Length: 369
Length: 231
Picture (cartoon, each protein chain N blue to C red):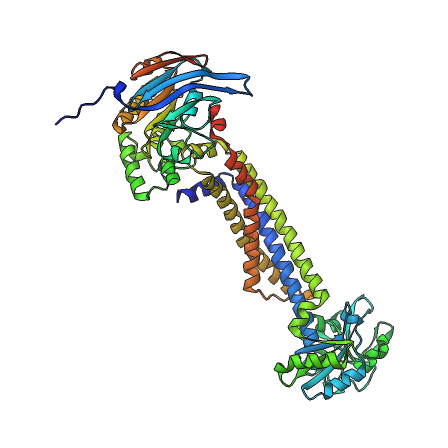
């Protein structure tokens, strides 16, 4: 108990310094939690676009980005006929620009694609999708920012299309996108095939057999399960690495803040540490008080940071312009990991101060009373 | 049946300094220039002398806080070697009282006094009993929960004595223990210190400028220029 009091007393003695350290860790934790959660949410949404009710995705082997993948239409058609395959939906991804929108994601899909089939149609008739190659459906948010209504002719990229429907999806990317009939998309983007083919198997346990069959039949294509794709897709890897790097830098700064505080803390109470030593405190006990202080500061920072981060995420989610892009799904493992990293960083920041404190010689500190 | 208390000369030597030399600034400032001293168990010895004569340095060496350049310090028959950990020695064999109380201001008197017990890992119950006994003896049992800044100078020094005796050390080293107090408080605190040391059966080696206080000790050792001149 007195150990805890020794730690608390020192923290309370310099309240502003303690507050600044806690705030440093808190903002680092909040930044890390927010960035990682937003990016993981984005990755999740992007994965959702790809899978869209399917279990597997087939795309061109060794491409750096799905936008550059080209699966021949004949392959997509043939895949749909395989006995183990329940559905095979080719999808062509493209990016176009519109009047005031430099980037609009474009999905070239068939009328039977799950994205069209399962979407909530706010306006227009889903049965009409694909009948006219110059008619497109818009995501609800795309319709809003393009100011488009059903029946209107709008410019998309170098073309002009009639809006035949507006759909609401739960996915922010899809909601801000343009759905073109696959044939029209091929012409528009000058492609003969599709970016990928999403596959729904009759029996999920046949995933391995399906992958092997694709590898044998189409050496230039690769089939991956959704989770496998998410793990291996280089863009996701870059996003995840970026998120953790940004968060890590934040935490490192927070840790440096704690280190600075702890160094100041040790320097300003050299005499007190000498007194503890004279009273029989061992190096380990003295170090424990320093590490205890750092751990307490970090823990308080982590708790405050988690609260700030969660608040920030919900605030972002509430911004209409970001509707659908922010997925506030807090994974307990992520929250725990961020908190643990914060505490470990703070404690690591106390290594030098603790080592310094352990080297304090009582006789030197007490010689001049 | 009565137990005869042997005179100090026949008691075992608690502190023995043999040709102890100590200097600072890489030998530029020689503080102790060959000190020989023996203090027997239960003795109350005053180290007197002008400022800078080496009294505090000798106390620090005897308490294992520093090491001599040459010569040896033996405590309870063991040569002190500060290259090895002195933690157990500091916890169980020696207590310090300084001119300034050196209590931690934000802790209560109770918490300050319990520090040596916490360091030694004593049981809380035993430590509390011991503290209550000592606090009662020094008349501060009602001040245990007070923070240090609420205690008077004399009370703080009494609390420091209480802390020094917590782990029942065999030796108490006091460096001008009443030097920061007024005359009245000084006499009271010193009287209390002597009483406690005698009750505890501890050995007291005390550096002091106050010859009146020194004269009440069992022995007065005069130091001058890093040497013992009179014993």
